[in-house]
Length: 209
Image 1: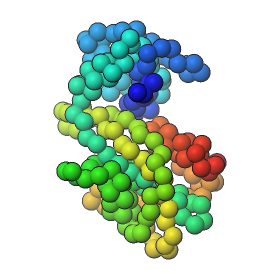
Image 2: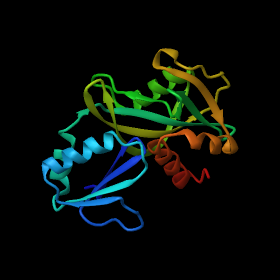
Image 3: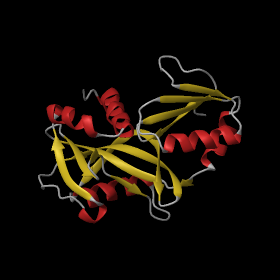
């Protein structure tokens, strides 16, 4: 059973846990909030462009998490952090922000299959191979008038080819780039917190710092 959940609202982070979480500074903490309080908190976070941490402490983590999810349309996704034989990592640029290739699962599609398909479609490369699981992230966004919660399973992938990547323009991807460590430091200035989470997980697991 998970000890906590973390949901990204742009660059804000909402944690849901059974107790206080050490080492994190919180803008506000809510203990056993009622449904209206949670609904109001979601509305506030959806309209905030800041980068603060919030915490819900609950006696019943599973029940609170299920109630929290009920306010959203759930759209499952999968994606990949691709590394080539030069130890460069593959980034896409979408709507002005650097990102990693990912996308929604098709009906009855497995996460691993979806992750590979999305990398190939969004970046125009083939022969990517999954090496290991990395992390599962949750982030939110508005789709017209619908509030979406997007759980995304991320995988570390390898690529041995030399094809030049090509952006999938119809998905509003304007650029695809292999980035070394120095280039990545520049990209980090214009990237969402949920993607930094994936990069940090890879750094921790694979000594890719």
